[in-house]
Length: 238
Image (cartoon, one colour):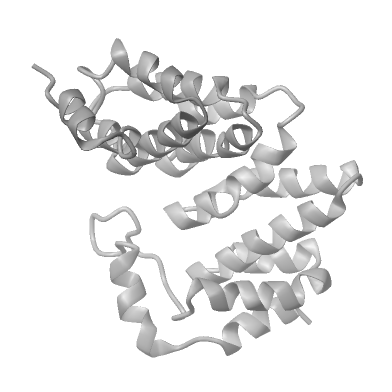
């Protein structure tokens, strides 16, 4: 019996479905088009995962991961994060978790699913490994979600004061055909901002030769923590 699956189902609230569908842009032509919801907020999903992650097999996670319901996929990803974290020195289990994640990226199809999982999994796994995978995802990802995984995974490196990959992968997005999808602009700008919290001068040096050509949303996110007078100077591109 898949207790994780059943517990998530038991928390569904139809009254919350319309609001969640609007929030995650599931209408025709929107980035989350066609996604289905049970009506469960993230804290509730986290509570179920906290209670059930130790009972979940990879077969159970597979059933949750391929579900049409957004919250079920979120539960699978948050459970995978817990399995990975608690594996500690069990490299075999950690690699199994990473392989599972990479084999199911087609189901990681909204920004929250990316952001709540990728740096906890790929970011941690690659801390002391070659990071070419992230460059490839950013550059050649089949979807905006795979590309976003490539960028957001660098959050873990930033937390360890390793900033090179964030700036390097940001360059990949600047070189892409424009206009860049809004959700990619936001992700790149967000991670640049986080890198700037660790080394503000490096961010300013990086922006100094690029700010006139950086997409507007990306730039706004990157300079969000700068003083208002300084932000205005960056936003005057002519």
